[in-house]
Image 1: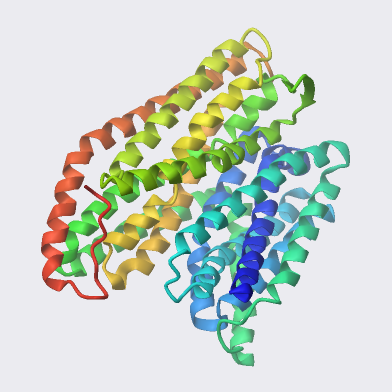
Image 2: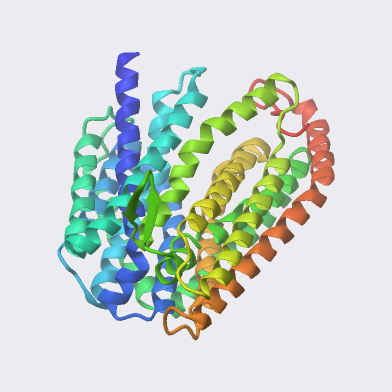
Length: 489
């Protein structure tokens, strides 16, 4: 048991290291792109959008590498090495459009192949049906937010006080430490043959080259993203038509719930883009806490999202547990509905903040309150798309749907960046015109979230009927390997 505990702690540490690098870059990304690449604000936002979208797409490749070529542990080590090399490139001062695009391409490949395989390592460590698995994944999720919180606080501070290169040097050091830790994990598969290793490096080189091309030529990236979305829609249709009739009701319900979950990524993308820009332009740079005035950098406001998640997650878990014990579990459609109501409230609050900002810098407490609502909504929505796939998809379609969900999440993130640029057009700096842009943007986002919440409310009765239909159709097929899960009352 002690060995398993040590393995879990090492895996959680690796996740913390990877999230430290990603959220550290996210917290300063737009400003960094503007200053080092000569991009406009809109161009920097869209570059981050393309980077985010590609980060969602590469896990499909990462899962294949872990399953077919190297095993999860070796793939994680390769991913961490790529990430460490990428942040080292940023720390070395590689500038210009080509240099930064190349570094971002390496980071996309490293982060993309890391995500599916670190989760696989965790499942492998607890593959014997340990009844504490839910607790394990809760603690693991907390490690993600701890790494993100530390990065969002530290990297913007270091960027201002010691420079861009030194701040990214810290990220590089963290990732190199993670790479060293990954080498101590137990292997999950025998070492691959030399021929497989040669194929691996060729594949990685081609992937880096492809990602670099897409990042360097935004018009091509947009075209490929829409082609990918069309391809995924075709995959959904083909999977539905080829599935047994007993699974089709579940697939329809899964598609509908996935669509709601994917929309969340559009709102989530505002954290790195419009919300950080709003904090930079219209929020006072000091916050009074415990009788002391604390200086806050614009990117540090992003840490509020993770801090609220750490605070709210145990409370929400206790609420779920209490509801389950009473025999009245909170269904997935109700969670989606509640989550989007909270998202609506957060953007209504930020719209009010933008209106108040026309008279001068506003109190940072507006951001604190808005992120509280947003983060609680995120906890109710995040990861449920994957949960409904696992519950409703036919066994031979889970992997494909998981990959499709990841790519569609990237598309939604890209659209979120596109939406965020509305606040920048015509804004020459702080002032009435700029606050009007943010007021318009946050108002539109609040309206969209409210529309999704309304659609969720109307969908709840239909979801219950679809779930009941799926259960009835699947019941003749029930076996130890196919067990309907009671998530919809």
